[in-house]
Image (cartoon, rainbow, N blue to C red; front, side, top):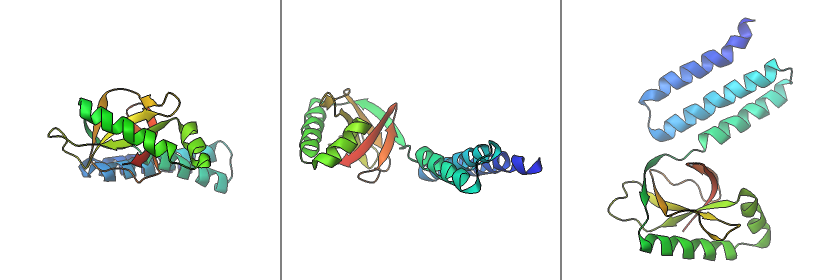
Length: 164
């Protein structure tokens, strides 16, 4: 019975250590904690070690993919025009199989121009591949841009980051 306390103890320790970390380190810590917890739950449910480890790894990666956003601003008309044009150009320029992958995800995160309100590395807007337009006039001020091609969470949107 004591073994089942390990995931909970590990999560508590990881989260306690992450309070003085940078946002990126906090995301990694949260991902590790979620992975340990999910793996522990899978193991307790009777799955084998391999299956539990894979479930834990998947949960950890998904949790750690959250982007640290400094702020969300109303986009300027110029930011909207640039993001819309870039997203449409990038989406149309993708090979058909890549378009299908992105379309399954539905949303793309595309870089737009920074203005004096943006403190982070990038200004990003979200594009809906099904409607072929921006989902809103919100621009996200992100600390560190995700890796191009990766999926990240922006508010309620899981979006494939396509950059500029």
